Image 1 (cartoon, rainbow, N blue to C red):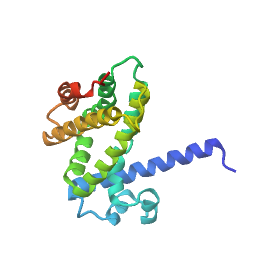
Image 2 (cartoon, one colour):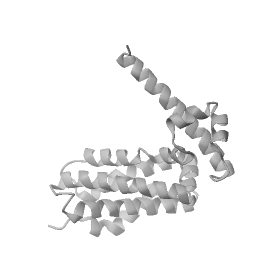
Image 3 (cartoon, rainbow, N blue to C red):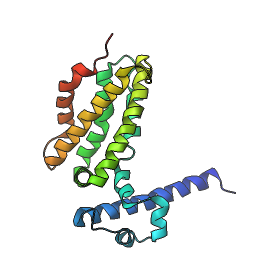
Image 4 (cartoon, rainbow, N blue to C red):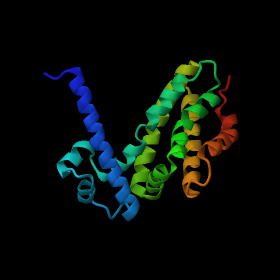
Length: 202
């Protein structure tokens, strides 16, 4: 029978394999382009079987999008951790700032992935789908913080959507500049523009 320690070890091994697959895919895709790289090439580079690949990912699109998959959860967690008395605008700014700070800290790798996603229609579509789910998560947390109903009140979803639009515009500007511009500074500038729209009505 498996113990808790065994499960922890299994999870670590699973994460290691997923990371190796992701890194092998990113290197190949950045070098050759998304459309030309095959799953066979990815598994060969990672040193695993095709069966192993499909145990972790449904498609090569999933390998790339996984790089950004945890962003939404991180954003919601960051929003939930903000002081209760903080304004929604400031709280949302801190919530969406985290992923951009990560991009700035690991700009070479992050830029490679972000440019791949934004410039590949199939990946961009998947990324936008994820952002739609992130908006719902942020709206739910924002509703809790402001005492509103995310299902009936327009504010939580509109505010969350506005914050994510700022995030996406900044990510694209940073990508287009080949990381020459600081994404955190760009985000602060973007929020200065949208701040009036983020303030809740009485």
